[in-house]
Length: 387
Image (cartoon, rainbow, N blue to C red):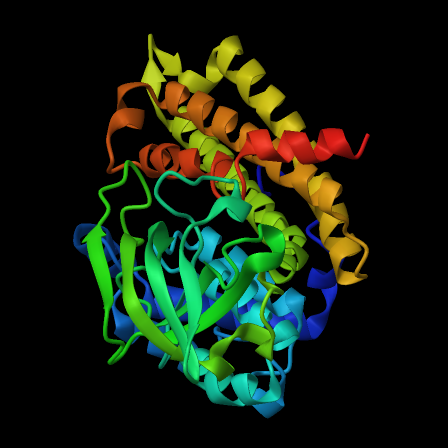
């Protein structure tokens, strides 16, 4: 029995979803064994071949319509890919970014030509995606970005710099958030589609040295008069970028909450196993009342978090998950994630500080979840405005 034995989301009872989950789990077991993931951590990124393997196995673009090369599934299938990745400790593979953040922009907002041109290659793994949003000196205030995409003949010239870009070293398809009208704030933002191969003026900066997420490449990107044709404005119309971004945020924040929940459950399972085996003063660590009380408290709150996340998933599948609730999920679960991992590391003692133990890597990797997808301070601002 799992440490947190609350029923999983109701959709997991569907036989077709269960079969898919089993297949995805077996793919990760075969193609992402611990030895290969260790190499990713050492290299600071996942090699391109794994993306192609994942595409061939149907893990990319599960919910993309079949007419665009996808598999015709829905959000449930995407959640399975992410959930199984967490359960099998497949670090660095940005499936959640590629599948549930970037591809939906094309599916929901792209022109017919954009969908036909890019989606099949994104589904196959021939293109790996990133979204260039954050800028040096501009954090969560997206309306204040300074990167521009100004008209030049039959297209646009992109100028600016981006930072903290996940998949920055690997991606060859990038959605660039830029101002097509610098005199405006929200209304001046457009999303530009850029293929990096042969893009003159595009340059990748250094691979950033992070305190966690060792296997995932994060980079600076630079744009110096990079030309994109006019048809590469997402949706074919300027000034829609901010609203396209805002429309996808509830799903993105739910995904972060789901990821946090997976870490909470895995941290508790790893810790219960450890304290029942490790001995001190003639008995196991589990036999001490402090250990039992600490883990009982974390299980109780982890169970409440799982029930809340399950409810958010059910609402999202019905198209009813609103922005404040998604912010609550992202904020509350990631805060709990940090506390759970910290206390579980403490129960490991000195071993918890050694990277050979999963809890040490979970500790380092978890810190970013309170920052990306909108910092938790921003989440609280959104929640407060809804009151």
